[in-house]
Length: 250
Ligand SMILES: [Fe+2]
Image (tube, rainbow, N blue to C red):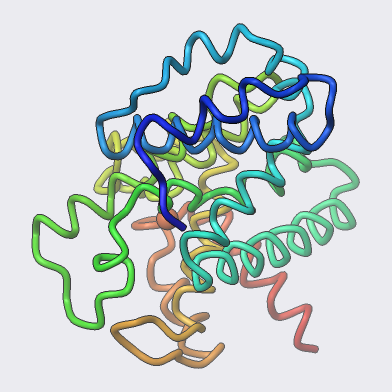
């Protein structure tokens, strides 16, 4: 998909705002404008002005926005889309397991599921050659890739009703021991939604093919995750995840 600087917004803002297709397109363009602004540092579109235009009708429809964000991921990178869908599905199953065991859980499950789906949306702002590089990343490339959690957060933080989700997106690469990013939060400073997604994200990363290595087995993933309990991951959540995964395989 090619974006033409300064041309892709003005074309659609002239349309009738009551038209549903128009609203969907404008919503998508507004998001694209934000992507460009946050990731590349330039944009000829006044996104603040757009936010106060009839777009507020669209912005209130979180579901539509989520659909647009997912579409953005699919336009950018098929692997990220498939990874996001798997992380969403496994997080959903784990949340169902937690609920069946305790009857209640102290998190907003629907926010958790959407955060799982959108956790890597910020990768739309990462260069293709970095995302698909088959070799080890340089320090500069690694720093660029690591910006995806902050880009994702900035993309969705202002949308009404989904600020919880934006925290899951922002902090899914924090580590329990404080050595993660973007803020180096530690232990319970990290939002629980992000702690949960971090474990599922790691499981899927280990068990799926990456540009730089082949998928490893379920058993290897389980061992790797167990090893990181109390270091990369919350020990309590790791134990629950392992129990959940064992329950799926018995
Ligand atoms: Fe990520």
